[in-house]
Image 1 (cartoon, rainbow, N blue to C red):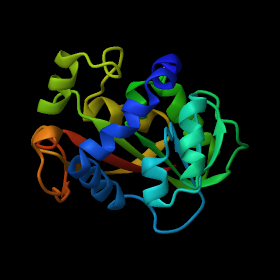
Image 2: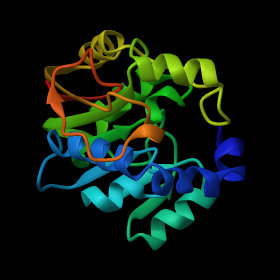
Image 3: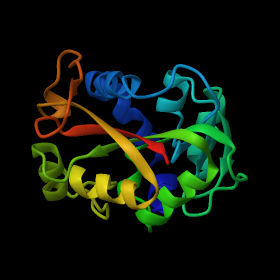
Length: 206
């Protein structure tokens, strides 16, 4: 995966400009769950689009070229993967994993590592393309450069993995009810899941 993102990092970053309202809608849903303060980490920070907009101070990623852009956006970044987070136990008040979960080699290990670096009662926020949604099905059939090797998760599957990794008090927000390329305005997030293609799940470390 790192080769794909290193090779096509400009195309990846340009997607957010081309699909402005999808990006803003995703941000709006994440803001419903993310803490307003505290020391946070984004796993799979990419070019820093989300971290800079959400004021997440620290990020890790496996793509050096993406990290270079994230640095220019003011994010403190380090090369690393979610299966082996390069920070000590109990380092962060919250961890965000936005879209990234479908690209990692071992999602269960990433969630366990997230729990390790979180403080007691720290919060995890994951944003996923729901495998069972219209958007998940569209991405699976389209086989884009980035998503052709992705492993999508249903909301129920992701929730189950979170619980097994030591999280509880799950909350859900959803957005994006039409294809990103067709969006002409921001779509406000709604509680729950089942209608939106992008779902945010937050949980607390037990």
